[in-house]
Length: 314
Ligand code: ZN
Image (spheres, rainbow, N blue to C red):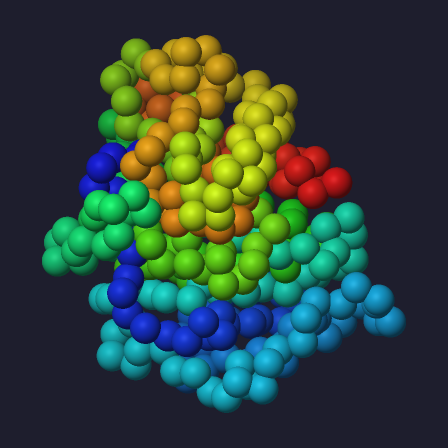
């Protein structure tokens, strides 16, 4: 769900080169490792990228880490889950494939934990105003949380993209703490020079409302070219998502197009790379809530998003 208060981000400060880089592992194992890195050691190893296994002799290897990136960067040692994370989490490809050499930012919208002082913190919105740092998003009527849905889809999507050769940068490292404010989520994609950003959400509309839609920014920090490319990405994402999930287009936004241009989404406005946001369905609608809660359906969501990324980068 994207309300005026729902996208916020951190002003806290790690150097731009501090995206943790994890070795090639399945998503779940990568997540476990990531939490270990953050909690126990506060360090990461940029030399883990490109992947140690599976890809030899490539002529399109990802850029080597800079000397500065090799210096140990330390994430907050005091309970890191009580303050917004920064920097994202980079995951190396697990195989060579059509997305080899590409960097894709996957943004699981919202946070696993709500802290009022952080939720209300004001950060730039990318159009001369401010917006709240972030929230935990909406809920289904039975209590299934949007942040959990977003995290689950992001995990499945990340696995698919890495299997197809992409490096993936997740904007938040877990679903138990406080992820980045919305401006930092955009900055993560910008610093990574991402080929594209997919932000995953689900909406909380009237119970009778149905369908998914794709949000795009009307004016992005990357200028008119990036805004236009994001419009194309929105169209591809809409079509791929619909084909994979068979969900109807939104009945309440977008006028039947399932694409909703917005002026107020900080995470998109501040992006200098192509970026769109999925609202995967209406969590307040019983039919869609049941789907969004289903792992099998979420796998279809992830497949649709991965296909859109491939078509966009073809
Ligand atoms: Zn949301």
